[in-house]
Length: 275
Ligand SMILES: [Zn+2]
Image 1 (cartoon, rainbow, N blue to C red):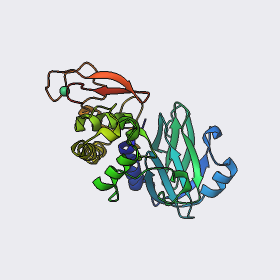
Image 2: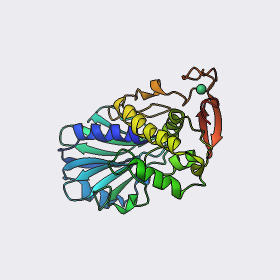
Image 3: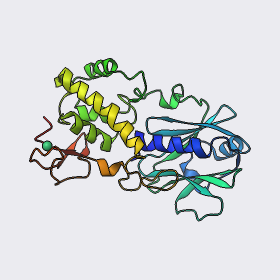
């Protein structure tokens, strides 16, 4: 699942590639992935200039000169690719924006859960599609005080379930939740209300350091994720617990990384370090 660092990577790459270009036409080999009427989408996009790219949580948005925007939701296994016109299209390519520079932006989703939707509000902080979402963890507004406040309101929830809850905090999913909790030495089953101030602070510090580090490495490639240029992210090499079941704990505590299930998700922990 592409999470915040992967979506942010693609957003930044969109800024370097498609922004400033005109959409010559739209091709929609698989209209089923549209959450907007096909004719409306084609009419709204053809001849329009892309003026920006944005991200909200795990969602990627391309902003248009008409004041509208296109949402690409990658869901579980979706990707956006920037390729020259005429180069071979991968199977399951579902929507293609052909640009005026002989490149095209291709949306594909192997698992077919992702979707494409026209938005009337290009500002991702105002768009009703995202109004249910919690704060952006890398925004200046997301302070330690705010995080403490939010934790206090959800004291009975397990901390991992909270980190996965997009209405609590945006953009974190299974990989980064596990990495953040290992960093913080907090067991994922702990109730939020049982965490002391130091533990909450360590989780906050984990969020604010791990996500930027992962963006720096263009995200993590587990399963199918690739960036806009089709390249895997390199942060997977830096994972301390995720997908490292059976390996010795990187803190050299003598323990091994175990896999359990928390909040319905496969969860990686060192039970010696995380209490
Ligand atoms: Zn350990």
